Amino acid sequence: MIDTLLAIVRSGTPLIYVTLAAVLAQRAGIWHLGLEGLMIAGACAAVIGAKQTGSAAGGILFAIVVCTAGSALLWFTIEKLRANPIIAGLGLTGLGLGGTDLAVQAIYGSEAAIASPVGLPQIAAAGGESISTLVAAMPLVVAATWFLVRRTRFGLHLTASGEHPRAARAVGIRPGRVRLIALVLGGVLCALGGTELALGSLQIFSVDMTAGRGFMAFAAGIFGAGNPLGATAAALFFAAVDYLGIRAQLVLGENAPRQLILMLPYLATVAGVWLSTWLQRGRSGGPVSAELRDY
Amino acid sequence: VNDRVVAVARAAAFVIAALLGCAVIVQIAGYSGIAMLGGIADGTFLAPNALAHTVRWCVPLFLTATGVVVAFRFGYFNIGAQGQLYLGAIGAAFIADRCAGLPPVLLVPLAIAAGIAGGALWALWPGWLRVASGTDEVITTLMGNFIAGLVLVYVTTGPLKDPSGTGQLAAGREIEAAYRLSVSSGVSPVLIALAVAGGAVVWWFLDRTAFGVLGTLNGRNPVMVAWQGASAARIGIAAFAISGGMAGLAGALEVLGPDGRLVSGFAPTIGFTAVLIALVGGLSIAGTAVAALFFGGLMASSLYLPVVAGLPAAAIDLINAAIALLVTARSWPRWLRLHRAAE
Image (cartoon, rainbow over all chains, first blue to last red; front, side, top):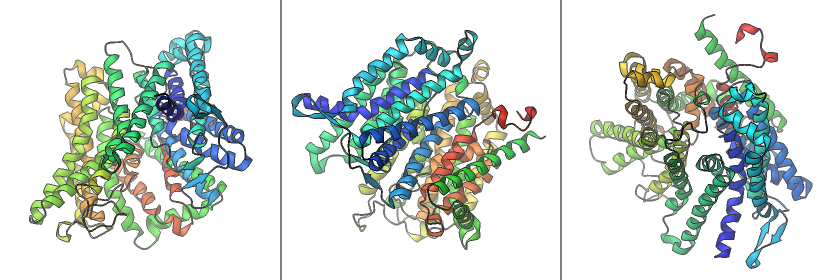
């Protein structure tokens, strides 16, 4: 039992970090579909950084630099060029997926996967298992994010900027700047998620390795209605579905309906978004104002 | 200045900016940016047969993009064209496989109809979720793409698998030459005529029927349309069904035309590119046709780049992504504006 839970938490940790980034963006009133691109960029940068510097810390640092730069670029196009957030976010995702593909081929020749000589430091956990430092730090980061959005002045400004930018401006908040901070913090979280994905246990980066996790994180943010704890629970649910699918495949062997099992996380995401809409029915106002949807 | 001229100039400026920006990135990555631009020009129209390849990719891109235009104009963010295209291809391949033996005049229209139906059905479930419960269509159509990709893998390794095929390639049976709309990897007058007809029907529907105009109004101001007594559910379902149907038609033509068989994971970037084409084309059918030619050229040249410029095909993805980042921009910061009134 304990090793099952540990396995779910371990495989869900990259998703949870990115989900927290989704929550910050959602609270700031931005539908962040660039998470997929930031996550893959973070994973790729972590492996390149670790390979070049020979240390996991170098990998994390490089991932943070790349992801915050990507976040700042998205902020510039949405806030300064007034681009549609959904299309611009998809563009950022395309930049991440195409850019990492190009980077891997440019630096290491035509390989689809690159391995890192170092991984994240491991910590002993219950049941003789070991977990990476980023998995161990994950509950603290979740708690810190919850504290930031629910118990600090900045969190209040963030929510105000997302829900009613004009009212926020009227009381002296600068929504544009608040959004920049939220997106850059989200970039750091995506970097951590990408790093854990690439260096947590496998120590490898392969093209397209995120496989839609960034979009799932976005859905988990919707599922959690902008609450970091609820969104984390949703991300853990997606991770559990994923894990059970892999277990089923191991148990059933050749007879397993492979494609159906691979579909499960995506189906769970659809079900989750539908459920959250159904639960929030009748409550006034969604997390996103209609004005952000038009163009 | 005429509004339309400004819109065209703006779209062209974004595309050129994205091309130049990517040339710089490619240069930094250690390749030759000039060679990339040259390779794109080669692959689009300069090299022998390049123009045929451009038109070959233009057909599915244009048809899919007209569907995106319908959804976006009606106010629904259907970004699941890729999945709808796959289901359309599966529908057409299923008819071609199971009804083989029918005369071509019967089978081909039937397969095309099955393709349209497959795409429309795959768009209907996100549409129904949106209309019935308000479930956001952005995430459901996006997830639908991943699910449809797996359905395609299942179909090409299971029910429709080519029994003579080796284990390597997951693909359906080759479609008999009599049912094909073009020879392999080419275009044909039939395909071009079908694309033009499809575009004309969508144009007529959007701009010349009352329902199309009502839907466009709904995209601009849903509250007003609701107050006029129109059924938002009907408009929503129609938007998804037509949009998915056009993507399905494109998928069916891929199977019956250039591909000649159902292949797992074929043309994986058409859906996303179609969204860009619709936006670059300013959500008009004429603009979409012009944009589809350009993006068709980009897609054709992605096959040339590795050969001509020694560049990975990912460079084309990068160009598309950069265009996506910029295409919906509505204002420039003051320091980038030529003069104040440019806004």
